[in-house]
Amino acid sequence: MPNFTLQDSVFENAAKRFPTPFHLYDEPGIRERARRLRQAFSWCPDFREYFAVKALPNPAILRIMKEEGCGLDCSSATELTLAAACGFEGEKIMFSANAMPPAEFDQARALNAIINLDDASDLELLADHGGIPEQICLRYNPGGDFAIGNTIMGNPGEAKYGMPADQLRKTLERAGRMGAGRFGLHAFLSSNTMAESYYPELAGILLRLGKELEKKTGLRFSFINLSGGIGIPYRPSEPEVDIRAAAEGVRRIYETVCPEGGVAIKSELGRWMTGPCGWLVTRAVHEKKTHRDYIGVDACAADLMRPAMYGAYHHITVCGKRETPENRVYDVTGCLCENNDKFAIQRSLPEIGIGDLLVIHDTGAHGHAMGYNYNGRLRSAEILYTRDGDYRMIRRAERAEDYFSTLDLDPAAEALGLRKKNEF
Ligand SMILES: *Cc1c(COP(=O)(O)O)cnc(C)c1O
Image: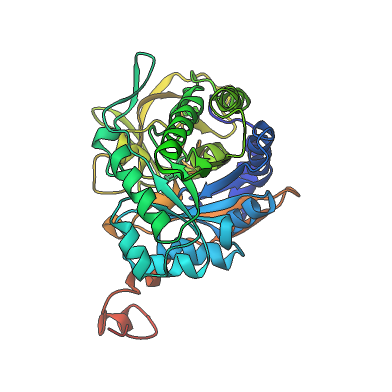
């Protein structure tokens, strides 16, 4: 079920220091998860988690990941810049290519990052933009549906990522001829999956494919990259994925397919690492009773897009009312002129009063990061609840001048008190 590790007083005290809305992240919780993952894979000597930067791209969080021995998975120029600014380089950075501007290869190569190629054509681009490195990773897409037993877990056949096996073999051979000597194999076949068997299944697919390719090409894989995709329980009825059991499952497959060892394992978890350690803290500012009962809050989809975009469930609790019976039914809404701007639809909740502090759970991954500025709405601050029980603002809330900073506003700029006209 959603994460209830923090007391309401933690959110209430934060809201005394910082104006709502804000995302609050639990530093000890994030460190605990990083350690639990490392421990689960401690049987694999070269295991490394490359935290998916896109899930929570804040330097304070990335530095925590660094201290916990993680690398970073980046897939844009700005994410590479963030990684470099936080002291990551070389094999601590995975760069996942995906139809991005070729100059980003130059940047990734300058950092000596491990590059994960998405397509055969990337090889030429890379040769022209930074050169072919000694070590290279290739992204596999098996096509069709990805099923575990009778359950369809994903649709790689519709996914834009990765290469089919025949293309992958050709790309591997070409990369070998162009000078690469060590190889990795990557696939991401299922997102937000709660199946403990996902990583073991995927490891089996990649290890077997690696063996087959080695037989055909004589080229050896030094690691497999299980990527991200392990889910978290957003709903109270859902159990957590047992990461230890998942890692043990990977070990069993590994010992069967690859008893001689020598292949390292990498992961690129985003959601699993930080999702349960973030909460969007927002205040009830409006109540409206029409065809339904609505509670308007001071956060909106600009701060957390998942409910509007995917209809995603995020659990909501009301500070100080955990024991109050949930005998009211509300739609909890933001202020966008978009009817999908609802954090909850027809949700049973305790009676909510204006000024009550609402806590929206599991916003620590793909939460603030997916925010946007529709309707001219400005994104919230991010607060770190630190190891010593203090609070640190790790991103201020956006201000109007941030929104206007890419526009040619003059002469309106002066009326708004903005200092200078932007240069074009
Ligand atoms: C998004 C992404 C991840 C992280 O996915 P989660 O679902 O957050 O675990 C990892 N690797 C790549 C290449 C991604 O695009």
